[in-house]
Image (cartoon, rainbow, N blue to C red):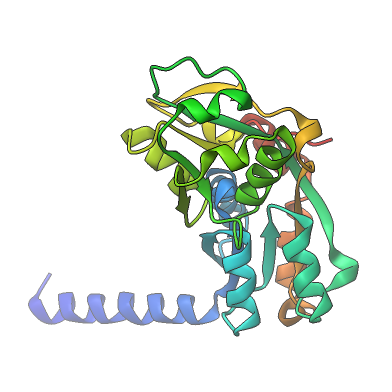
Length: 249
């Protein structure tokens, strides 16, 4: 192949790539950090079946994501780790209220690398540093604060709580040994390499962890967004959620 032919081939390939990308439908997903592995796998599977769709994933705490959507970040679909932030956007008419669905359930646990005997929430005052998600924006942090208040240990933990930007940062602190333990979700504990599950927080101490999903107002008339939204409620999505430890009821 001559140099001229090589240049022509490269040019044609480049133009084809630009054309395909221009024709692709981009969907922006704002998803609670604890669903990262689930949504990555579902996104990969979906785009194999729908090669004309590009899924752009934005992971973070539910409160941070809600704030971003409120401030105009591109988002076609929102999955929150509680109902509060979904209701917040619904009240502002930034999500399609009639599209709201329960996506999955989870539970709160405490994990860490501490050598001290920690088998219940009552043992937390023994520890020096405890990571929780910032309760102002992280649902897991809200659940943790509620549980500590109800169990009567919160007032004994002054100066010991380390705030994290989301539940995955809590897990990271626990894995690195930067804290004695962290409040995370059961599904996060299953991903831990070093941190061990020390106890499960009794359900009566905090509201049930409910993940809600909804289309944003921006995506209300987007057929591709509706198709992906339906896919997330199908059997394949349910199977992958179960694989990663989430509950469906």
